[in-house]
Image 1: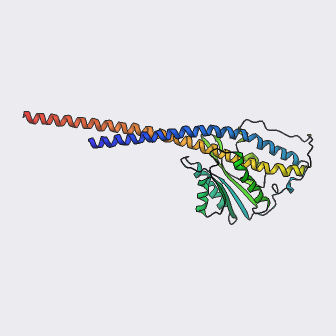
Image 2: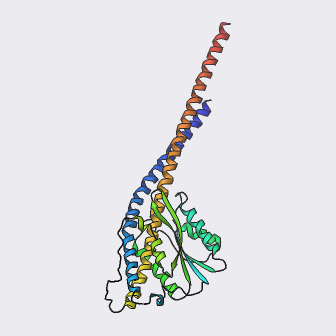
Length: 301
């Protein structure tokens, strides 16, 4: 019986140590989540305002002539931009977006698919699927800087405008709230109104949307087309940056909730083990008393 109680005590100590670790990880994830959410909310209005500007330019020039807006080519090659995390312990964060990506690749049929991956988990998953990896980036979602994401956006724009790929698909996780994150697969390039509205829950951010009326007049210098040439690549870069921020906020939120659940589960396990330990100790005491009583009765008899 003494051996059993010692084993239970070791188990309780081990679970308590584990709970300390998960609690610390929860606090770290919560701190990172607050910073990421702040960055997400700050980035959303810019993309919306930039797209509203593109729409206003479209009223006086044919935007369909621009390579980033042209949608009249057949789809033979697709570039998949997948955003995941570098580490695990984040619940179903990586699993959900990778599963959606696999489904999207399967739905493309015989189209040739290549990938650009942000995050080690996504790159490893696509390698196992046999998808060619054009480029892979790590250590970006932890503390995202625009300068780190800028080369990725430029590379995507260059590959698409050169005609290397007929279509670019974006796979990331949209941050809705601390307890809700939604994996999203959307057609990224060529650009469309639906694409910009789908990146991030901008409609829930409380920002007032800038509306352009037909009566408004604008002066573009040197020309609307040249303005479009400058603003569209910047818009794509901003959208990639926003998608990374959305995924980063979702990752830290998912990890915070996963570690909180682990801490709660460890607490319940400690309570159960403590109850079992008390039962075993009480049984041992009862057995010792019974043995003493039996021995005394034997001596008296």
